[in-house]
Image 1 (cartoon, helix red, strand yellow):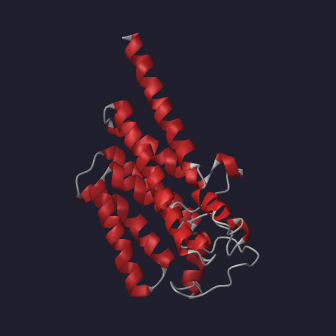
Image 2 (cartoon, rainbow, N blue to C red):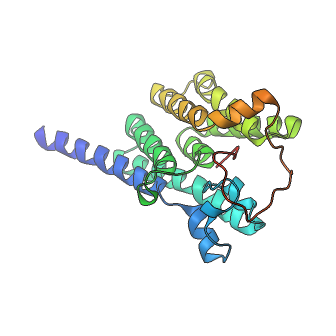
Length: 220
């Protein structure tokens, strides 16, 4: 019995640590440096996410960043599924750790992105109906209002209700709520600009090589 308990704790520890370290990989920074676009932290808002990478003028690097940031959430969840034999509690903790890793990456002194791409990756791998509904919500809101941050906030706010509506395990409901709260906290400046009608719309051009201004991305 003691051996089983130790194995369970080891699995839990590996899932959480592995998830966090995967989430901490700064794909935006790596892509822009290897792609010759410089340090993404010196471009636009200084954020490491795909939205800010797009401001470098390199759609290819932005796509790589988006796939990488979402993909690390997927890998963290799938790894936890394998390690724990698909135990929802462990899977949820690993997904939450990957999400937290993107926002607070150990490699960048805990200064990371806003987590939206990783949010979708985690949801799609942990409870795909919720991930799909959240993605459709983002697309619909973005198409209607042309505001990336608003789309991310609405999708995040609806994730937990979506999880309840699709009868997901309580661990995934809690995971959805946890990620939504952090997304709202990380988007506090965006929320302020939205309320003032000053939030940049999708497609609005910005100067690529400018000193970073804090927290202007709607998704990262």
